[in-house]
Image (cartoon, rainbow, N blue to C red):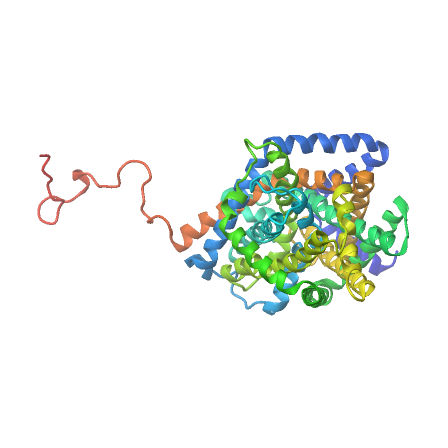
Length: 547
């Protein structure tokens, strides 16, 4: 081994947090090994744990995510918004900051579900609205439900973690860039190397691998479906491994290049292609219809936001099952991404204010997401309803990965649109996987901002293997195993995100003054001083007549 190679290996062993790395790696690699030993046992275990989570914790996910959204909206307009992350100036321009935050957050999922999700709601609307599926009345409801699932709430859990980690890491001394740092006021800065903090960071590693592997599984299945749909190339399980390996290699190369040369440049390219494809669809599609549809769906989402957020389906036949399949799945998916997305947001947010991060996290990103689902999803709905394109097999067979290709096939120069769509899916995933692997490397090195290449490559390989396994487990059931796995890994982080929000409230109220209550407010008993505590005579308390 050369001196250079020896130096890289030495750096790797010196930087790792042995407890977090060992348990995080063993937990994840253990699942991979168990799959190769007994695939049916792994599948049954995933199904069992999934059933327990959606039966007992679904309500908690809904309530916690709703409260986080309200808190972030308050930070945007309230006095705490002016608080700054550290004393330095921002490292990146606002547009680059936004592009990286959006690409690294959940944009791969936005592209995947853009042409598809509204079709499922059109066929089977939420029982909350009492609308019959497959009718004209179901069209605006379908877009409204899609916008609700992909605008504020999913984005909120990324943002709250990013805010909490960044604030405590950049405004406190000796607080590292780690997920557990988001809970600094609760566990104490002196206990960030203690057992509770280690447990949080280990869960963060496992949740990140599960969440991002799920996304890689979705994107990989979409890429494979595109090859089969357009060119008749059916690769089977070998193809899954081949595609996932290729994507893993691509995001590993981007990751080794670093944030500035890799993630930033690719994120900027993603946003240009994203906007181009979205505007082309708007112009070539039913333009006036999309404007009318988007206005109505936006109004409905705003008016029904609270009821949609807290809808559990109680008392409605099939209501709870529908809510578990869609809303709980999406919230859990976002929560499983919250450790890595939050850590990455914190990494690029130094020097920005709370208001800037909160607004970018849920405001600017929603402004990019809403037109995408309105134009892409609305066009697919219109084409399906009028018979211009047939998505019936997508809904009947639960194969969302082929929707984009059916949609763009109906366009002039359809093949060009399909190729652009596949490129966008792939590059968005690369930035997501790139930033997530960087985040996991940071988690397992005690918060090091620039982990070694060996650490990044190791977690990149683990990520790719996990994704391939979930896709193979899914088999003919499509994305079922992916959805089950992400709910299992994401649900525990609902409580971590809630604790992160409480940590910010505790610190902001003590350091910058309470907003809802006076500083001396007494919740139980009386704050009035007794006569023995007050001076008598002139200037003392006035006597009160009991009569």
